Image (tube, rainbow, N blue to C red; front, side, top):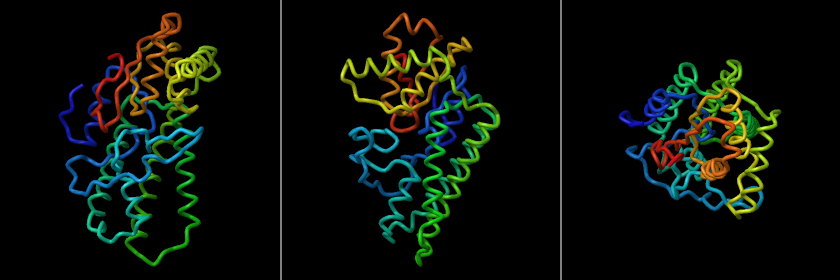
Length: 267
């Protein structure tokens, strides 16, 4: 798959070119800061933020020491209230809107699906933001309030797209299948046995659900994720012939940054 269009149109292009059903991880719904965008690079203060199970994980699991998502970039400006960044808001707002338009085109026109784990994870994230938005005390800095509003509009649009996928039957849940349980347990046990970085339950479910869907439909699938745990688990699953023979080939492509939709698996 060759990228000939600039981001975010390149997201539509690579998904459209895929010969298989596309299964998207949550970071495919994140608007990245295009490398050519004329905004300062900001060190990400949350790179070593501690999360569940004592694991230190970068936001959205993308290995960058800089804030590389538009929504998070706006969040940094909002938190610091540094007026020096105010000049960059129009272009950042434009990027959010542009990405939303492209994602609407993807949801309504391309062959994509989302595992239930990703749907529920995203819905919880939306609800947390909306609750903070409703309860926060109104500030008297109008340009900061404008950042809040643009963030909310963006998440409203993403929430609508997830609901559209649900109504169209594009959210899938194969967790009642025995194969799902077998893959989930196999990955969890193999990771512990090989002392690998422990994924969360959503990562395990993403792989188990995707493999099981491929088995039930006997159709190859294209997975899109920037999470290294997904790659590690695919390697484990396909390293067991007795397990991998149960379903067709799954292909893994990275999300936009930093690998530009490169094929991660099979290598």
